[in-house]
Structure formats: C-alpha cells, structure tokens
Length: 319
Ligand code: RIB
Ligand code: CA
Image (cartoon, rainbow, N blue to C red):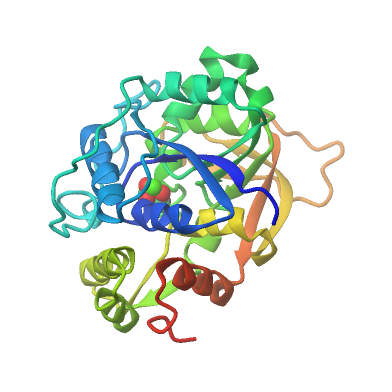
C-alpha cells in the first residue's frame, strides 16, 4: 500500500467545506496533518466552531484546528452568504464543540507544520485565500515544503456565483487569490465549472439522513438544507469535489492555462481570466499571468461514488 498523502486543509466551514472534511477525514489515502480556518462563508469564530463541532460529531482523531485571518489581506470582504444558514453549516443543531482549537495563529501553524514535515505537504484550499497569501508573503521560502496547492476558486468558462464574473472564494479576497495563483507554486485550480457538476438529489439526501454513520447523516442534513434554500431537488458536493480530485485525480480533466485575477474595482473585480487563445505570439497581454492546471470537468458518477464510500452510504446514493 502506498503511503498516505500528507495534506493540510484550509476551510471556511461552511456546509460544503463540511462535506469536504467528511471526505478527507474518511479517506485512507490522505494523512490530514491539520485544518486551518479563515473568514468567508461566516465569521472566523463561527468557522472555527463549525469545524470543531463537525470533528466532534464524527469522533475524528485529534487533528489540529487553527484559527487564521478574520478578514481579507487588504480590502473588506463580502458579507457572509445566507445560503449556508444562520450558523454557516446548514443549521443542523449539532452540539457545541468539546475539542479545542490550536493555540497558534493559522499562518504560524502552517509555517511550523510545513517546516517540520519530513516531505513537502499538499495544501487543499477551500476558502478565501487570506491565510495562504499571508503565509507566502511572510515566509517566502515556505513554498519549498509545499508539494502542490489544490484551490477551489474562480471560473474557467462557467459564469460566476457571487457576481456575474466572479466566484465567492476569489471575490472575497481577490488580492490573496492573486498572490497565491501568481506565486509560481504548482497549483491545481478547481473552479465553478466542475464544482457545479457533482450533484446529490434531495431524495438521496433524505436517505443519507437515515444512515447509521454520523457523517452520512450530517452530509444528508447539509444537502437537504441547500435543496430547501434554493428550492431545488438536488444540491452539490461543492468543496468535496476538490478533495475528490486530490484522492482520485484520474476522475478529473485538467488543462494548463495562464490565469490572471482581476483586481480593479468594478463589475469584474475578482474574476479569474484565463488566456485560452491558441495564437498569442505578438499579441499584448498586460497584467500578471501565471500558468496553473485547471480542472475543466470531472467524472461526476465516479466522485459521487467516492463520497458514498467515504460516508459508508453506498446504498443511499443510487447510480
Ligand atoms: O464559490 C464556492 C465557494 O465559496 C465554496 O468554497 C463555498 O464553501 C464558499 O466558500
Ligand atoms: Ca468553502
């Protein structure tokens, strides 16, 4: 058996971040070294509480959870989106957390954990990139201990969600996204294009809520919350698709393309612009551009099954 991949997750839990954590914590192929929290889907303190609550609910091992940036690196962030519910995690009524957060700031936790690691570690970034940008700016050589960053953010050819041109994680902290995507470190970007592909139906979610496993019941409750909020008969595994790409990269189609993050004010602020032109020699290209690997589509049935196996609920997710 190959060694489990050492990973660190950066989250703004967040209903779909919770789905991602359920998948990551259940995967034998991932060695979760720690979880860092950042403001985004809800205020930082709520993100930390939700993350600790979730880990308690599935009786997870004592993985360190560190609190990080409570706002973007430069400008005010966006208001917390109502879609995640009053508590940011689908208002499931889970008990307050028993376990405690780490005593150090997330950026210090990341620096120490990466520096002490015997091998480079993979970062799975499922939130605004404020923590990661601060890490790269404060410790420029830390990139030597980062194997790859998998980043949920932006759009490739899909429309935005938070704005017509922008996706929430990037729009909440565009400067941070630009710092990370222009860093030159190996990046796999998981934009809204695949994010919108992997669905779970309302009926499947109801079946999940009747499962034996706490994780499956929580996942079902979160999906049902999103179905009801949007008045739709299905919802998405969301951030969990990014984790699925790490676990099972064969299920994702990627292409290498130069990307620019729009930082100007106005309607396109926070847009991720990809240079998809075939002929670029001799054509102007102002601004900062760096090639990243971008996931353009995924094998949705394959990732649904990965989720079902992780939740111990294969019977609930009909194929
Ligand atoms: O736009 C989707 C992203 O914004 C996801 O990470 C979701 O959790 C929210 O943070
Ligand atoms: Ca998120």
